[in-house]
Length: 207
Image (cartoon, rainbow, N blue to C red; front, side):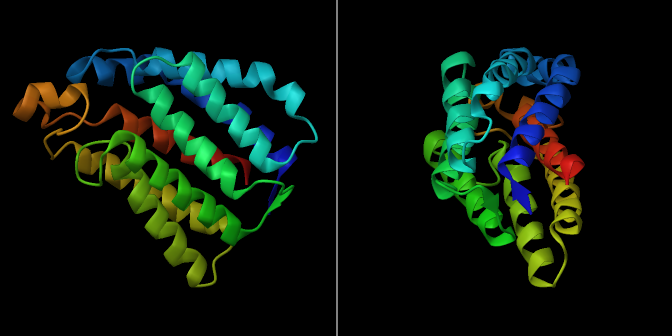
């Protein structure tokens, strides 16, 4: 069970992970796009952490909405709107909840994916963060349906996300700046798929 206090911990751990990997994420982005993904995202998560003290005692929906709005206002490029929308859509599902059941978690994840698809006008298979999110979601749902606890299900989800990151190396980018280089994007992993996998890994670490 994830409660509001745990959610704040997850955001802090995520910020630490993104900060630790920001140079690597930026290098990945530099290979196929404009080279600012890691630095921008780390800046956004740092801004989230700076506001978390004001979120103590708030419901899960309010915490995620605040995180999403912070990312939209502080992260440049497409990452801010995409990540921000994911958090805000998940937050809308968890409105007024202080404890998140497994099914609520699944619904929030599903809403986050829908938000990314809507904001990015993208779908799975276009070398974006969705290529990690969608397999992770399917693995999570399948594992929970088979009777697994959330931690075990998230282990499967993270594994599926990493497999999705590997898959992005094999396909051509058709969305975002990476699409400008066409076939030359093949062979490079998508930075957005990589960073969202770090987010999922941070959730798992806190369970």
